[in-house]
Each structure stands twice: as structure tokens, then as C-alpha cells.
Image 1 (cartoon, one colour):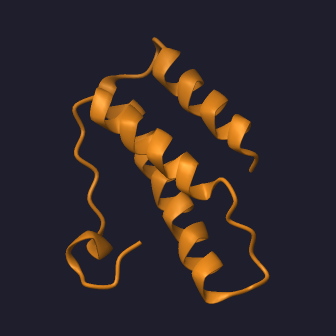
Image 2 (cartoon, rainbow, N blue to C red):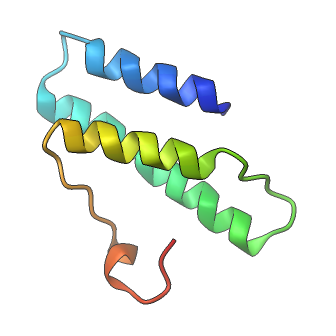
Amino acid sequence: MAHQDVKADIQKILDNTDLSAAEKISQLEYMREGARQEMRAATESAMVNDDDVGDDLKLLDQALEDLAAHPESIEDGGGATL
């Protein structure tokens, strides 16, 4: 997914008045997990291009922070984190 697409997708979720804050957080966390998986794949294989994945992850983290969510991953507490 292109970097601009992620930014637009985040904004669509945040602007959707039909979604509750919890639903927005859930959708953003799902996107965040996908970005983290892509980053892990990029570190394990030379075949994956991760040019904008870090930027996407930063955008997702900021959107979640703005919603007062505190995303956590099982990897956040370990020594080998991204």
C-alpha cells in the first residue's frame, strides 16, 4: 500500500462520524499491526521494500495517540523490537 493511501485511509477513519472512538481505534490498530508485520518481513527478506512503512507506522501511532489509545504489541516489551 502506498504511503499516501495509508494517510488517506487514516483520515477517512478519523473523519467517519458513523464510527465510535472504540471502532476507530480498532481499525487503526488493525492497520498498525499490518504495518508492523510488513516491517518484520522487510527485516527478514531482501525482497520486501519498506520505504514508507516506518512513516506509515508513525502516522498510525499518532492517530491512535490522538484518540487517547495506547497501542501495545507483544513485541513492545521484548528486546528485539522494531
